[in-house]
Length: 217
Image 1 (cartoon, helix red, strand yellow):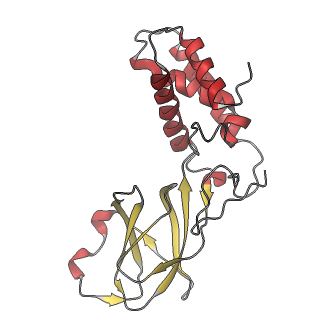
Image 2 (cartoon, helix red, strand yellow):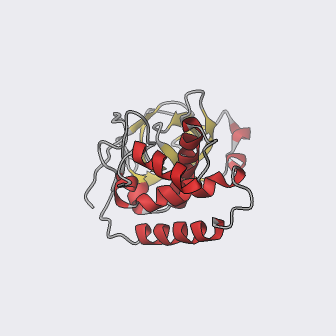
Image 3 (cartoon, one colour):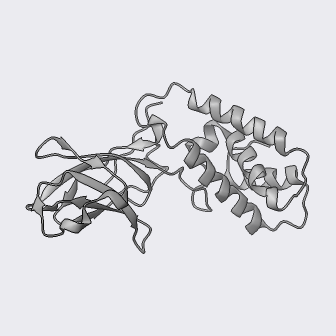
């Protein structure tokens, strides 16, 4: 059976675990946990980084697109000036009355909609345009997304990632070290692919005005 669709992946995970008591929903949870781990492990790879269209900044905060996992860089377009990315606790919140061209920014949390919120300092004295580069998550598989570029090019990452996520269900599983070694090998191989530029398929991530996803690998 080819590991080329979400349905086939679920079947394979259940078969490898030999656990008849795992429901379809639980297998799907394992795959989702694998996606979270894969996204973290690939976060620093160039093909997971996206430069969206310009974001308008007219207040002390702005939000990143929903698929953003972390902020890599930001700059003011008008001044061609990079913003220093600092920790949320380092942002000069004590000087709230200071206005000017922002020079610092920090990811300060997320909104109710799950968007990463970024605060800037000082408070903008005009409307600026911010160009950001951010790391995005692996597009989640679902009933409406049968495959993505990771599953199609490295199905072993998904398979072994989901098996590793099952550790709480299969305590004392002797195959865990082998699965970990196979996951690490698949991750190293995938990182080494000759990607050229942003490698997100346009069909993998919902298209928004704020992001441009190009696949050239």
